[in-house]
Image (cartoon, rainbow, N blue to C red; front, side, top):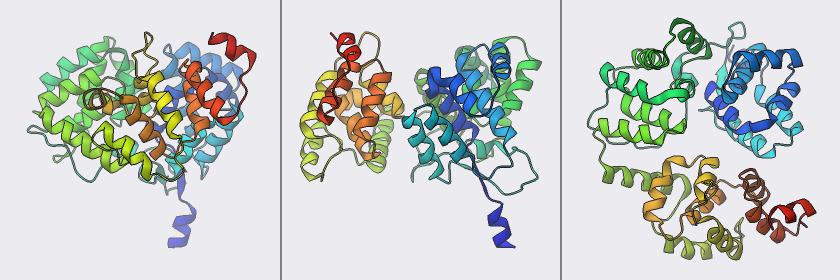
Length: 360
């Protein structure tokens, strides 16, 4: 019986995975959809139905997942399609998800379509210790106030809070005013939480994952979260997750202990010099931190690594076992071809004429 149950075990990406992928895929959306089996007419209909680009991609991916819920391993199909789109960076990301059972969707009942409790959709790795809050609940008056501030990102926030695409569709159908839609989503989420759930922490994390760090900070303040305590928690998280030293000088010392670092020290320093200065378009170390899913650490790096925040981001990059080729590709996608050229020069890759002209 146990063997039969294991045979039915499915590995499917969660809605949170698909939302993250929708945020990263960019203009290869239509190409990916084609490789996932969508016809041109279906794509046109998706673009008409969903005005926001990211929402369109997300709904396409959800649709694909629902069509293929009987398959055992959707991660493999997704990786194959991304590879055909030449998005090796996203292939690596999806493969990482597959290796993390606590983040992936494991479905045993083959006759049951893609439906589960909200908690499974938002399952994400947790650290061994939790943040310290005085208040852990939120009143509806606070949620109403927040709903007026979230705006267009509300569907993304709803996904990270565990609401399904069907939940979001019903809310959009039932309410016309944007603020009412957001409020309903937040109230539905609150009703599903257990007594012991730290609502402040959960909502702050969802807002941060959705790119609304300003509102995440506001929610934490509602929970009475002490700023000094927050710094200590972030410092601890960076140490546990990436073994990141608390001071810039210790990174430079720590380099001596690394055998065959992914980024050689001389190149490491060149990249820091290039990415540390603020960029007018925001394409500096902060954008790279976002790409590496380190957005919640940005304010800490700004304050504690004032002289060289890029060094902290690159250190985490190496700890994630990312390659130089991936880093160059990411920098190219950030419109920082000038920095990508430094990496390619180290790798012995000759710049094409177009790259040289674009960076003159």
